[in-house]
Length: 297
Ligand code: HXC
Image (tube, rainbow, N blue to C red; front, side, top):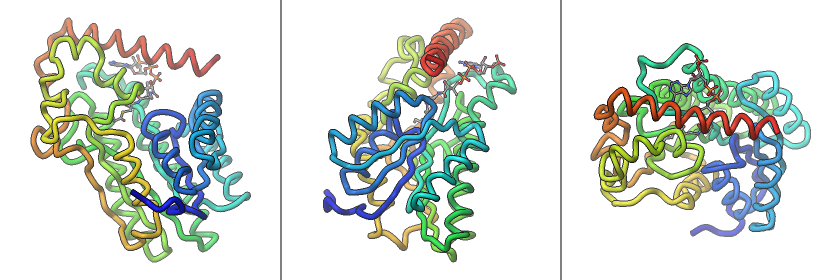
C-alpha cells in the first residue's frame, strides 16, 4: 500500500508500543523506514517486542520502561530522547479500561483509568510539544481514542470521559500549535481485538450471557467483521507521513461503520443482572492482578 521509504527520516514515539495496537503500529512504522521508540511499563515485554519487530522488519527500535502515570518519568525519558535526536512524531496509544457499572466505581477506580488515559496522554503530549516548540521543530501528534467520544460510553465512563478529553485536546492543539508546525490528529477505532482490551471489555461472563450476536459482536458492524490490526496501522502510517502535512485537527473513525449503526458502545450490558456483574468484576480483577504480578517479576 505504501512506498517502503514512506517514513524514512522519521523518529516516532509510541506509548504502549510493546503490545496490542501500539505494537502493530510500531511494526508498520519500522517497516516503512521510521526509527521507533516504544514506551511501556514492563521492560521485558518491550525488549521482547522490539527484538521480534527488528527481526520482522529490519528496522530500528529502542525501548524505555516508562509508566505514563508518572509525570516526572515522562519528562526525564522525553529529555533523553530529544537530547539524542528530536522526535518527528508521537503516538498516544497507551490506555487502560474495564467495563463496570458506574455506580460501582470508586474514586480510585476512576483514577486507575484517568491517570493513564487523560493525565498520561496530556503529560506526554506536553513533554514532546514544549521541546518541539523550544527547538523550532515540526511535529505530529496522533492519539488513539474510541468512537464513544461521540456516542458516550455506558459502562466505560472513565475511559469515555478521558478519551473525549483527548479528542478535545487534539482539536485544541491543532489550532494552538498549528502556527508552530505541529499537527494533531486522532484515530477512533471500533473493535480491534487485543488481549489487554478483551480481557477487560469482553470478559467471559459477559460474552456467555450476551454473546457475539449482540452489540458486542461482529453482527453489529455493517462490514460484518472486527478490524484487522494492519488496517489501523496503515491509517496511522498515512497520518504520520509527510504526504498529509495539511491534515490536522481530525478525529477519524475506523470501525466498519459500527458507531453509525449501533452506537459502537456497550449499551447491550444494560441487560446484565447483579450476579453477572459480580462475576464480571471478579474476572476483570483477576486479569488486573495477573498483569500486576507480571510487572513486578
Ligand atoms: C469495579 C474495579 C474493577 C471492576 C478494578 N476496579 N476492576 N471496580 N469493577 N471490574 C477498581 C478496584 O477495586 C480498585 O479500586 C481500582 O479499580 C484499581 O483496581 P486494580 O485492580 O488495582 O487496577 P490496576 O491494576 O491499578 O489497573 C487497572 C488497569 C490496568 C488500569 C485497567 O489493568 C491496565 O493498565 N490495563 C492496561 C490494559 C488495558 O486495560 N487495555 C484496555 C484498553 S482498551 P479500589 O477503590 O478498590 O481501590 C481501551 C478502549 C478500547 O482503552 C475501545 C474498544 C472499542
